[in-house]
Image 1: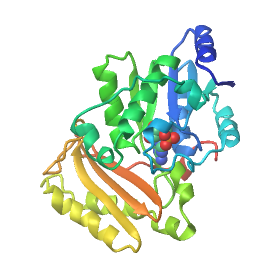
Image 2 (image 1 turned 180 degrees about the vertical axis):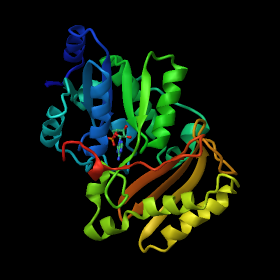
Image 3 (image 1 turned 45 degrees about the vertical axis):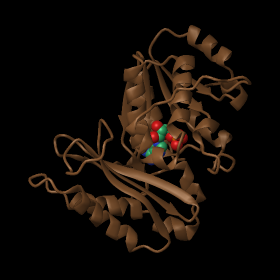
Length: 298
Ligand code: AMP
């Protein structure tokens, strides 16, 4: 496994390769959710690149860029067991040298609502870094987690809008045994907060359970079922519970597939997001419990 820190060295690696390249972009502090993306990339491509880069441009001024968890040694140890060819580990200066001026700015309701409303500029940072990674690494396939549902829609749109010759694979959210979606940010939680954190999964489950495919329901009624679960927990601040169209991300008045059921809360200082997907065939994608999967154990 090669550790590559510069754009030039990454291009050099690429020149040696003939087959397809799969890319998994990450911010590190890897968990089984990330590893499931890497395993899929490994199974589908001749060459696998994992990028680890805590991208400053996607963090707001008062967000957790400085405190974002990092453990490169452990990350490399995990990736080396999965047959990764290259870990792309650039510095901030390598990605944003002095004089950097050119950003990718998605516009419209897709980035003004949901996460975009709470984190202005977030998707501009995401789209910019992801396009740069695509151009530096030149993958045929890229792997993203359903966990970040709006990010998936933004990147899918960017690939289509800019005619990028790339196939995007979106993979299910990997969860802890109690339903909490795995996230690098879970490490911020105190033990009391961690015990409360499955509330996101329970709220989404309560909303899902009220849905009867024979009688598509008013979105507000479904949201209310989720809201009651959150309200019953102490010290949890609800940011949003929403029902949106899976493709356009526009809000739905009536829950009909394909749709996203999305939640964001604050527990103490930690912000957590989660979602379930309602597919066109009426099937729900609620994610997978990580302990039951075969990955190397982080
Ligand atoms: P991050 O390191 O948080 O930027 O995430 C890197 C990639 O891993 C993104 O595509 C995320 O959506 C994905 N990811 C994060 N958490 C999970 C999870 N619990 N299950 C599946 N994918 C995830």
